[in-house]
Length: 171
Length: 171
Image (tube, rainbow over all chains, first blue to last red; front, side, top):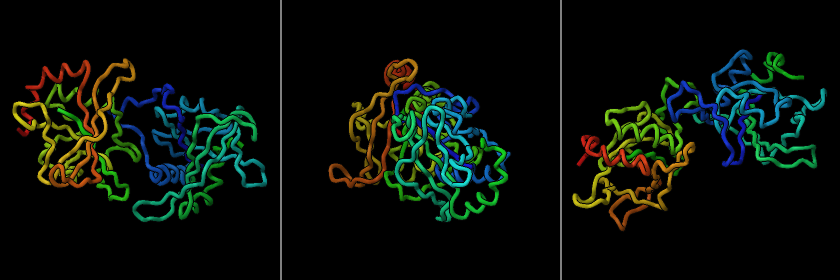
């Protein structure tokens, strides 16, 4: 189980207006990396029935990036989702990041996310870019994903509850 | 009457934890420039008794920047306030931006803020930096203010209701 945030590197793009009406103007879901991991991803991993008002569940292998905004619970230029990673091969650890129209490709190094209070490692953040077509000939798009996973002391929960979250998997 | 946002260009600074407990984790006051002007400043200018749950009132000539976080209603690394501009001289239009310990000095050009929907000009945004001491020998600090004022069609309200908001003035 991961939590991901999506955005488009294109400020001229028309933003889907998913702003929740129950929040006063100017209030939005704008979590820090640590909050995403500590309050949302960890809770979801420990209890697969957990459902906040901000983060929907999707199967990232079955959704193209431009279909994601309408599947989100809220968000204007950024959208947040829970998803289960699909394995590329049944016997391996590599993640399948392909969709019908293209694939997500990691860019840069994974970043470590630390707790501000305890300074302990709580998760990792991977940045991915969507390419249309098939590797290695894909065409880079403006869609960007930040994928967060548990790490450090929290990874214990991730491993020990892996079987619990499997019902959400697409595989 | 202006609305200002403050921040410190110093990511290592300890943030005052004013996060409101009634909001779920990750939700915060993070308005766009247009929202600040349209939903907050215009309402305040039209009705001086207006008080949102996010923006406090301060007299910027009587507060040093480091005293502002504790006067804010919420905010961790950015804080929002309503304030009335004090005139430097009774007969002129120049704004007094001095405090006891220093002064706010404008940097760069004022930016125009447009309505996304109507494309009309709604306000202006001025960026100021705090200097300790007295001009022109002040010492630059890490404190930054963004000052928003009504402009365009909204400025009519500003002028016609100027007398109404005077009771909030320090002068």
